[in-house]
Image (cartoon, rainbow, N blue to C red):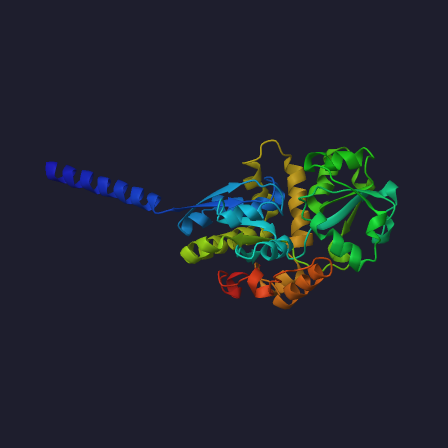
Length: 338
C-alpha cells in the first residue's frame, strides 16, 4: 500500500514538474499596438483568450501604443520585437534609417482607415473643399502622414489649407467645438470619438482617402530584423495565431468584442462593437482578402504605393516592395481563408 502511495506521489510530482517545464517553455513575446485597446484590436485578444498564442508556445503581452507612426522606432530598437503600425510610414522609416531593416510580416488593414473627418456644416464634400479651411492634424497621425500624397493626387493647393498641429486627446473635441473645420484620423477612431462628444452620426462626414486616389495599404504587423532572424518559428507562430484570431473576429465580432472589454473597463461595449464592425467592413475584410486570404499583400499594389509616396517624398535609399513586406512567415493560403 505504501509502495502504491509512493508511486502516486511520484506520478503527481512528475506531472507537476512536467507542467512547470511546459509553462517555462512558453516564449515571452511583447507586442505593441498602435493605439488604445479598442474594437479593432480584438483579433489579438481573441488569440490570447482562445489559447492560440499559447498553442504556438508563446506567452504574449500586448501594450497600447503612441500612434501608427511613432511606434515603428520601438520595433526597430527591439523594445518590442513585434508591433502593429502603418506600412507607409515604414517605407519612409526604412529610407531614413537604412541600417534598421524592420519588415512587415502580416497585413491587417488591406484598405487603410486614413480619412478626413468633418461636420456636415463645414460643407466639405470633396477633397478640393478643404482649401480655405483649417485642418486639425496630430503630427504623429498615420492619416496625416499621407496628407501630401492626398493633396497631390486630388489637386489640392496645400498652401490654401491651414494645418494646425493638435494632440490626439483634443482632436475630436476641437472639431466638435468648431475650432477646426476638419481633422485627419483613422475613420473608425474619429467617427466614434465624435459620437462620444455628443455629435449626431448624421452630422458627421467621413472622407476615406482610399476613395480618393490613394492605393496605399494601412497598418501591418512588423518585426525587428534581429529578432526575426534569431526566432523565425516564434514569428511564424505569432502570425499564425493572430490570423486565427482575425478569422474568429470576422466571423463573430459580437463574441470577439468581449475580449477587448475584459481589458478596457472604461469603454462602452456598444461603441467598441460598432467600431470593430466598421473596421472589419471598410478596412480588414475586403474583397481582396476574401479572395486571397488574411495577411498577404499584392506586391504590385505595394510597389505602386511606394511610387505614390515618391510623388511627395524624396527618397535617398528607396526601398523595394520586397524590402518592406515578406510573406515568409505566413501560413499557406488555404489556412488564411475566411
